[in-house]
Length: 153
Length: 334
Image (cartoon, rainbow over the protein chains, first blue to last red):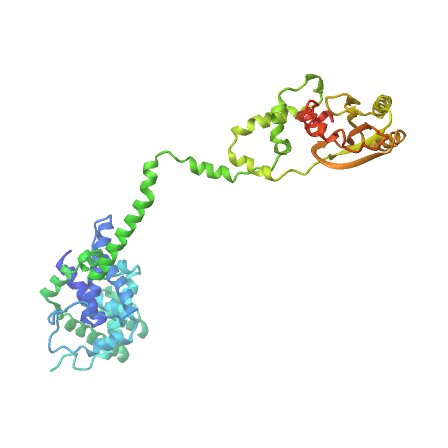
């Protein structure tokens, strides 16, 4: 397992849950599922679709029980390094209110830089659907973000 | 190429592809024209740009090295389960309880199974147990066995060949069963306590008659009996003379019983007693024992004075073959 994949998975769950403990727990499980699927796979192709699939499966599982107790790990404060000037409130509101399929597509496409093809293969939908979800999600996010751009001056 | 004209809605829907540079030149030019002509399209593009710029800022969130190491060091779910099932992880009381259970089970298995191991192939008690409950309903041979008094069995062997009739086969079967019985399991004899329902006449008529001239009456009574289809039922002939009287042991057809008694009344009045007897007579045949005794004028003579019962039961007249012993193996003669 590459370190870049670990970082991508950890970031994905941090963006989705905004909960460090839950993000760590889900990351471990998603990477376990990714490893399992990777060993079963017969063809040698890009691993990003598999990563999308694994993160999506675990996200679905954990999104149904967001109130689970997540104090199993002694999470380091510096686990996720957040720029001090960055405001997370717009993103928190974005994740809270809109269709999950939209913000998941935005995360994979805009924040983790997965290609539309990899995302569509991982989710089993067309690339057009992914582009539509990303475009619509970005527009909604643009409405939420204040004129300052989400940065403190 | 022909120039494309896009509606405002189509321009808004293509803004993401326009912004990401994935539109072909014609559509790209058409979207640009829409942006110039429609303020709503420009507003949508502005929102999209803000969203993309915010995402660019969110990309600055990074994962620290310690977190990556922590994720890599996390045990797998199976490893977690095994680690929780480690013996040392259990509390001391739980370990003691488990040890006690294991020891108790081991002792129980030892006590219950070790004797069977030493027994080896001695599994017959189980099969005997099965046989014990395999009780057949009492058949005809069992009935015959129960009806034959054990004391009379030794007299089975000296069968007189003259008395065996060709059509009669049952006595042979009875004898065979009687000899095979010891070979069977002891449990088989248990149903003998339940006798089969008797068929025929299990009784005998005992008659006593006192006449003045026994010598004269005896052949006449014998002729009367023979004339009515009667046959001797014992080994002695009809009218066998004994001290003080004559002994008749015979069987007659049941429909001639009345005629016989009427015929006997001509000689003298007689007493008749119907008494039960273990020997079963065939249907329609009745057995009689008639004792004709000389009548004493002085009145000293009386019933049983010369011992009819003695001759019957083998007492004083034990020289006389008892009717039972003579026919124990050949009831068909009755």
